[in-house]
Length: 209
Image 1 (cartoon, helix red, strand yellow):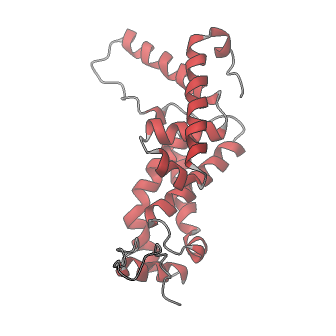
Image 2 (tube, rainbow, N blue to C red; image 1 turned 90 degrees about the vertical axis):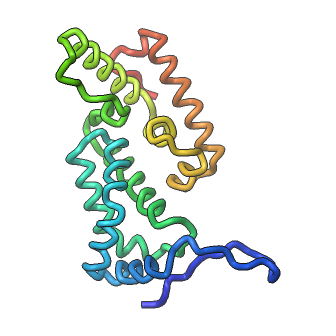
């Protein structure tokens, strides 16, 4: 297995080379992943599976589906990393795989998964009285319906930017799209969500985009 090829920014001879995104130890592990070495894949999993799960959970709102996606991402790692050349961080590369697989999961579902969980609402506390519990449940339903009114692309950008609190630059890298596209999708997602909560007619049966 050949050594990992690192992508270096262009620099003049008078400027020292920058620190590579992928360290030598991580590069060695990735060589093992490409060779389908179980120990290397296990190390990759140990390092990054919690972050892969977290972003899958945010996007799908489904715990079981999120763990399935985690397994898919790491099972696909040997083949996926065959094209990885260190242009981005390993974490970013893995999360981009998770995002695209989560989008496919949502598109393929017969009906929308519960989208409330990735809105980061606090769970009910034991001290909540029945009225507070009902109010939270009603808010969940409205949020779920609002998110279902967005397209998959707009929904994904909204969750990554406004729920995950990632920058437009990070999201652009995750989705492999221009930063301007991220900003445009986020603008229209926010606009539609505002309209949804302001216009009762849009809350009937979940208007489609």
